[in-house]
Each structure stands twice: as structure tokens, then as C-alpha cells.
Amino acid sequence: MSGENQLHGCAITGVGSYVPERVLTNADLETIVDTTDEWITTRTGIKQRRMAADNEFTSTMAAAASRKALAQAELDPAELDLIIVATITPDMPFPATACLVQQELGAAKAAAFDLEAACSGFLYALEIAQAFITAGVHQNILIIGAEKLSSIIDWEDRNTCVLFGDGAGAAVLQRRDGARGVLATRLGSDGTKANILAMPGGGCCQPATVDSVNERIHFLKMEGKEVYKNAVTAMTAAAKEVLERSGLGIEDIKCIIPHQANMRIISAIGDRLGATEDQVFVNLQKYGNTSAASVAVALDEALQQGVVQRGDKILIIAFGAGLTWGATVLEW
Ligand code: UT7
Image 1 (spheres, rainbow, N blue to C red):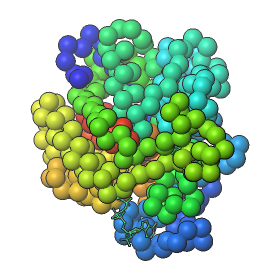
Image 2: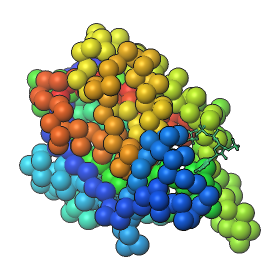
Image 3: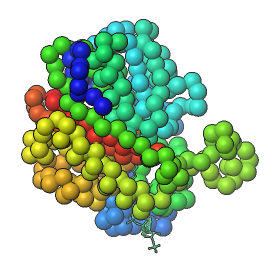
């Protein structure tokens, strides 16, 4: 829980994002699996998604987004104290993708680690970074949500392959005494439902074997309906809690940035919070679900479009495998 007894102020001083050039449309997917543009559009709201090139990885997309965030913050990478990469698609099981990003950026002074909270990862990273800064441990932190989900998608499974895309979003957090920044955060998890969204293969339980590859367990598996129901309930509850703790009503929020998984989930949450349509930022029609990158890319686009001005309040809400979820109210 953040927002109480802060020693130092923490501000987000730079935000950046990167999506790969290659576009995969719903029409393209009609040629790959038994699906239709009409089904995907009405059930999810997604029209297209971006696919990383063969020589693009989570680390390279993360570095591209980070360079933009660092430029906006006017911060030399050499000044970074810490780099956190939130991802479920690291370049490899180890070393951490954050170390590869550190090397790409030339951030020699920084400590670097990966964080795994699936689609909620960027909010988990934000909470950790702001806690380090307000406690006086670090001054300059780079957080990144980045995914090459195309590498773990089963292109024979129409239930999942139409939903996801690749991309990265980054933010620079810095000590700025007097800044308000994060007003309240709520993070949550429920490991009793770990099995409804998972990639079973490749860890120590079921390491890679010829059989495991043939059994297709190195791909993302999801019970869509169960995830859907849990997403609406958990994101709504977390959002209500952070609004209450920051002493704000939904009408005080300029921009709501929900995890971009499904338009129907976003609308259900908006309705339950009593939000108007123009308060809710949506870009899933262009990118699909990019997991840890989702809210970070959306935040960057909302800022670029001038939706948010200094002093405005932003509500970010996320949900993903674990299960994990989170909500944060920011003063921009
Ligand atoms: O990022 C983490 C959070 N993830 C999410 O929030 C995703 C949450 N879940 C969802 O967004 C939705 O559950 C889905 C979009 C995945 C599925 O929507 P749904 O309304 O729950 O559909 P369903 O799974 O109940 O499937 C309905 C039908 C099934 O056919 P039958 O059994 O009714 O004949 C599916 O086989 O739609 C069929 N179907 C498809 N048809 C055409 C499933 N995928 C497709 C497809 N194209 N791509």
C-alpha cells in the first residue's frame, strides 16, 4: 500500500512506447485459423495487433521504449539506479531481460531485475519503484512492461491466437520532492486460480522434452470465460479501493487506463465504476492484448494525444495471470 508516510516525492518524468512495424489484421487471422473478423471484433473489439520481427525481442523492444522515456525525462541512462522489466516473455529463462536492457542502454550503474506478474506487471513495477524512491533508497528508476507474446502463442488455437500482440512501454520515475505522483495503489493476487491462465511447459515442473513440444505445452493456455469474470470483479474492486483511499470520486478522474484485453471487460468495469465513455482510454483495436506492455503503451498514447494535462488524475487498472491485479491513482 502506498501513499502514506512518504519521505520523498516521486514523479513520473518520462514515458515512452514501442510497437513493432508488422501488422497482423483479423483478415490475416482468417487465413490461419477458423475465425472471422466479425467474431473477433464483436467478442473482443480487437481489429489488428503488432508482431515482432524475427530479430526483435522483448529486450530490444524494451530498450526502444526506454530510450523515448529517458529522452523525455532528459535523463542519461548512466544515471539510472535501477531497471525493472515486467514480462512473461523474457528473451531467455536467465539472465534477466532487465540485464540485457541495461547493457543495450549503457546504464552501467543500475541494478536490474525482471518481475513476473503477467498483465499486471507494469503496475507491480510502478509500486516497487515508487516505494524505493519515496523511501530514499534510489533516485532514478526505469520501469518497463515488454512482451513478445507472439513467441508463446499457439497459432493452431483460435481461442487464444486472435487476442494477443507484441510491444513495450516504459516510464522513468525520479525523486522530486513536493511531487505527488502515485496517490494510492492496490495490488492483489490469487494463486488458487493459477491454472486458468498459464504456460505449463518450460519451467522445472515440465521442462522441455521432445514429448512436451509434441504436447504443445510451451504455449499460453487460457480458460477465457473464467479469466473474464475474475478480471471484471477484481479490477472493479481494486479501482474502487484506490479511489476511496485517495479521497476521489470517479468524476475526479480525467483518464482511466484499463488493461487492454477485451472491450467488453473494459465497458463492464467502466459501467460498474460509473465512468463515462470519454473517460476511458482504449487502444486495443490497434494492438490487442500486449500483457505487461498494455497499460504502459496506453499511458504513453494517452499522454501523446494530450488527453491528460499536468495536475490531472489518472486511474490505471490491470489484471492478469497468477491471478494478479492492481489499480493505481496518479496525479500527473
Ligand atoms: O490478459 C489477461 C486477461 N485476459 C483476458 O482478460 C481475456 C478474458 N477472456 C475473454 O476476453 C473472452 O473470454 C474471450 C474473448 C477469450 C472469449 O470470449 P467468450 O465470449 O468468453 O467466448 P467463449 O470462450 O465462450 O467462446 C464462445 C464460442 C465457442 O464456440 P461454441 O463452443 O459456443 O460453439 C468458441 O469455440 O466462440 C468460439 N470461439 C471462436 N470462434 C471464432 C472461440 N474463439 C474463436 C475465434 N473465432 N477466434
